[in-house]
Amino acid sequence: MIKITFVASDGERREVEIEEGETAREAALYNDVPGIDGDCGGVCACATCHVHVDPEWIDKVGRLMHDGMEADLLQFAEGTTEYSRLACQIPMKPMLDGLVLHLPEQQY
Image (tube, rainbow, N blue to C red):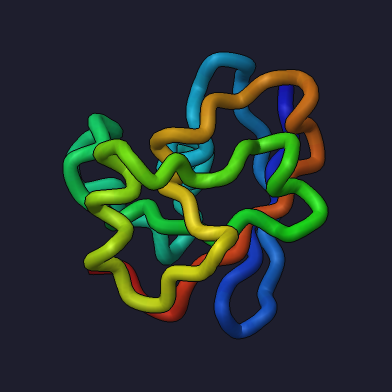
């Protein structure tokens, strides 16, 4: 199992576990993490699983590619930063055990 810590905008931390091959979106939804809606079902068609990757983890997760669907969706999301990603686009791998993801105040 791979551990992920979701940090709410108010600082509350929630550690969850997920199987390798699942996504950070699924980890949040399967564990009832507030703030991740994932309305499109994980197919990169909305931005309701927007997260900010902790700066210490961004190089392992990978930065946003500015020429794809994920970037197109995030341009309309509130509060995007250089650490913004869609949780549905972060597949869980052993090297991400301990990953920290911060949740924005709102999802649209």
